[in-house]
Length: 169
Image (cartoon, rainbow, N blue to C red):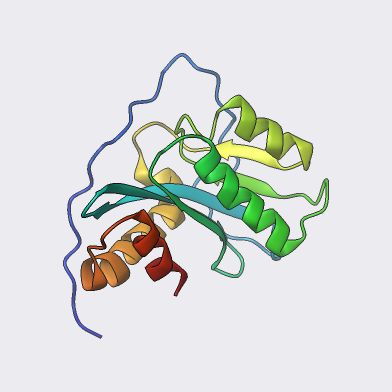
């Protein structure tokens, strides 16, 4: 293991302040008493030689395990939605299991498609406040570790597909 200096965060999106948002059900308390009680989600970006790759993660707070992830060359809603679907499939989440899904206020996470999918499985949507990384600290920490341990140490990659293969390994 060797030391790595993390880079500065760049703001890539600006939320619409008047848009309706789910409440913050987590209130910075990132604890869970059982698996699949609380999931946190976020997206980050990776530079490749052919442009940006975007990565969406879904993390189970109890096990600290990445239950879903996806890589794409865009930030449309289907990117985090695919990561969510992977988590639902891998963990075999049943309707009304009591799952709380916490994210930032990114447009993808508060979109109709995303929130409808959460409602379909009976999951409670939760979002933190605007421009405050502490309200989604566990997911932000995962992004930082991901960038420090994989991206900075082994990147950059030729394209999105090569980055996806590296993440999968």
